[in-house]
Length: 337
Image 1: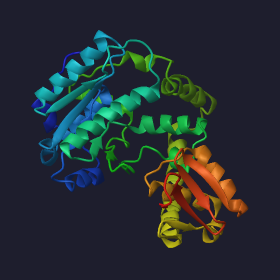
Image 2 (image 1 turned 45 degrees about the horizontal axis):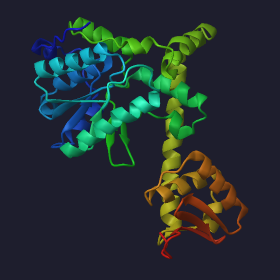
Image 3 (image 1 turned 180 degrees about the vertical axis):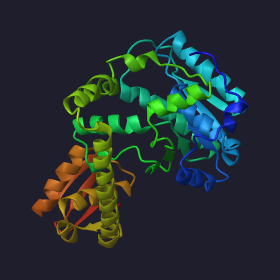
Image 4 (image 1 turned 120 degrees about the vertical axis):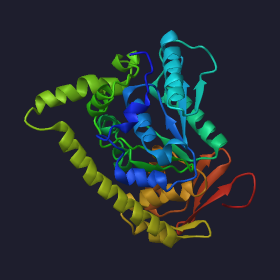
């Protein structure tokens, strides 16, 4: 499916709309621009169509497309498709790409970093924190299983929230999480709207594709009497409740025991380990640092011992414990954070 065929008639259909709660959320962000990540695939094309149906949102949209240049002319064809589609929808578009004309395999994480660096750069230029993506219910399931395989915490297992406030100030909005990929494709077919098929989605080089094409079908065969989707989504909903409760509890604890940028370690040790971990994370985040899980684990061990310690955060920054409190100190000067 190669030819962009957006037309105004598709905006008159009333069978599918953005979820009301998210529509109201986006309306209330006025007058900020709304950046829409669009690859040309069915999910992001469906998102763009549904957004264009809302008169109060349409004039605020700007499409962002990143050409990874990993599939030669096919990648360029995706970019042309999205440009033509955005033009037909009368929505401005910005296209980015890798600096070199690289071909071949790129890891998922590297591709994602390139793409989101471009998104954040353009969002900064537009002075807007809002990025809308076409993630759907299938993505939620796949992400859960991928995070589970990687040993993620409850926060990782509940990733892909409808509205995600990032620590860097950006806000990711995912209006399609209640829709399956098949439902979105059926809607586009009904509206006679085309999209681009990314051939890399069939490649088993990427973990997500192996989960999608091998793990999930195998699991469905094993548990043929149950719905994998409904059971997993129910489990995730319960984890979301737990994650939100832990977040609220930890933030309250942090406010209570952090004074003049020093943590009361004696009070912190009285908290459950899950709260202790999150308070440490908040302490460093409040000082502009995001630490690896292994380092947080190391600090947890040291904190629970209760003895004074010094732990290097970077080459010039040390986390210091007196046994009663924790603070940060630069090595090249006597001042503390």
